[in-house]
Image 1 (spheres, one colour):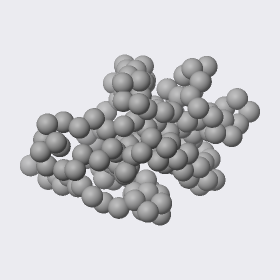
Image 2 (tube, helix red, strand yellow; image 1 turned 120 degrees about the horizontal axis):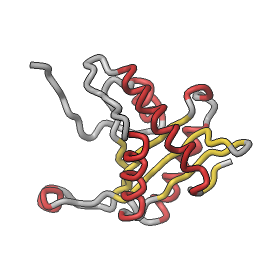
Image 3 (cartoon, rainbow, N blue to C red; image 1 turned 60 degrees about the horizontal axis):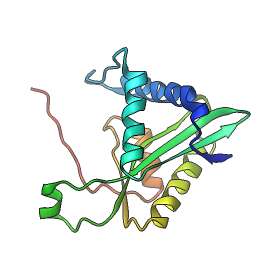
Length: 159
């Protein structure tokens, strides 16, 4: 069952954020990802601040009082360069989409993504952006199956 954010689930949300960061650590072939001791609390605070300041939403997939997945989305803030270089259409940004590792592949991510897309449409966003870590092939494949395409890329080289 998908519900809107409820603070009683904060600790489980923090656990899922840590689970995602651990996954990114595992797949990072350059070993640039880190997780400092303060990550759990501070990353949660950063995401929550963005939700409050940027007209955001959090949806949770709950079963038996357990958070099995979450999605966090906000409305993109345009900077001065954006204003000079693009149409500045209202754009939703998915900050986090996490499904408990042990139950991935059961449609939870799909349902959460669709719920956030509905929200962004309801507030007249014209597009949605999602940043995907390059080595996260599973995440990239999930988004392409949901009709997301590459619009921006960062290419890197170790020197």
